[in-house]
Image 1: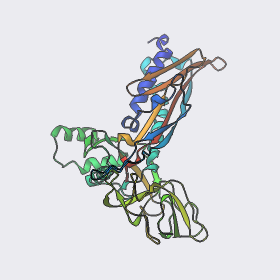
Image 2: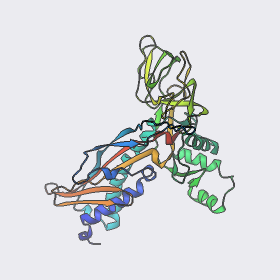
Image 3: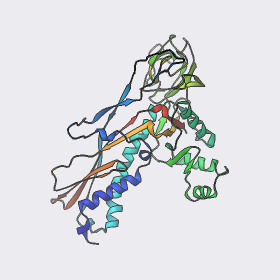
Image 4: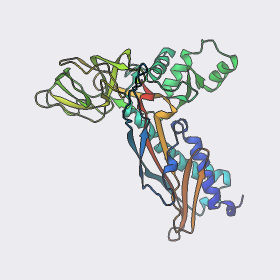
Amino acid sequence: MSNTLLTIDFITNEALRHLENQLTFTKHVNRDFQSKFAVPGAKNGTSIRIRKPAKLLGRSGATLSVEDLTETNTTLTLAQEGADLSFTSVEKTFSLDEYSDRVIKPAMITIANKVDVAGLALYKDVYNTVGTPGTTPNAALTYLQAGAKLDNEAAPKDDMRAAILNPLGQAYLVDAVKGLFQSSDKIANQYNSGNMGVGLGFKFSMDQNVATHTVGPLGGTPLVNGADQTGASLITDGWTAAAAARLKQGDVFTIAGVYAVNPVSGNSTGELRQFVVTADVSSDGSGNLTAAISPSIVTSGAFKTVTASPADNAAITVLGSASTVSPQMLVFHKDAFTMACVELDKVAAPECRVVKDEKLGLSIRMIRTYDYTNDKEILRCDIMYGWKAIRPEFACRVAA
């Protein structure tokens, strides 16, 4: 087929098609905020603040009890990624199909991997966790427990719940549920494709980009240092002295006597509240350590997260053994995470094309130029996007 059909329009549209096909995690998350960027007359730059839903305590009885409306927010920031390649005029003799598979597809796989990798790294913002680090789950119960975590956090019980598994996690799960009662066509699809599909309350997908977490080196017998602590940090002692990165960002732990609460009723769920460490932290020469944590310890009010603040010398238990390497699969409601992909401006290049898929909210810019010195065509591909965990309580990690 003639090379004259390899126009910049064709190349860009074909690139967007390949990009959409390669994305996995991205297809299951909230996309409501990208319209806030690049608004004519009101551009917000590369960051916007996202308001989280307000919470109220409510009242009992007929007596008026007015509450102040308190809103919280988080920031979504965009970053630019891309892939660039060149090929000789001889290589331009590819047919359309060859050009798509040998030139465009590899570039889009690279970009899609960058997007999904960045999104799946948000596991570090998620505190609810099931499973055992270092052991791949081999029973449906683990995923049902993850669903229960979402239920306890009042995540909507609808068809917007998804699960992203690594290849081994999917293999174990398909094998685990093969004997469960379900329609024969679903069993046949699992057998033929090796994919879990829809089940256990989730839309299951496999993604090789599932992030891997390494538990911190830990050490000692960690305890809470001081009663009545609240907020986004926790003062502790009892660690092995003077050790770097004693706790790693993404480590999960519980505190004896500190239970999670339902965010609507404020009643105890009967399970210890899990906290995630939000930054690497080292112990000092006396074994003291102050960890930044999420969620914040809040003991009363509409944003209550725990039944009580920890007692002095309450035991701290970190999930997983020291230095254990563990893939972090995710189950989540759509509104746990958001991804924005905005349309880049065209530039003053002879061949520049920007294509957007309104339905999926994806946009890519392609620029094609020619290096006459080396007889090479250069193709530049760019995407502008950003990720944020806006409701991390609507997600649960599945340690493997």
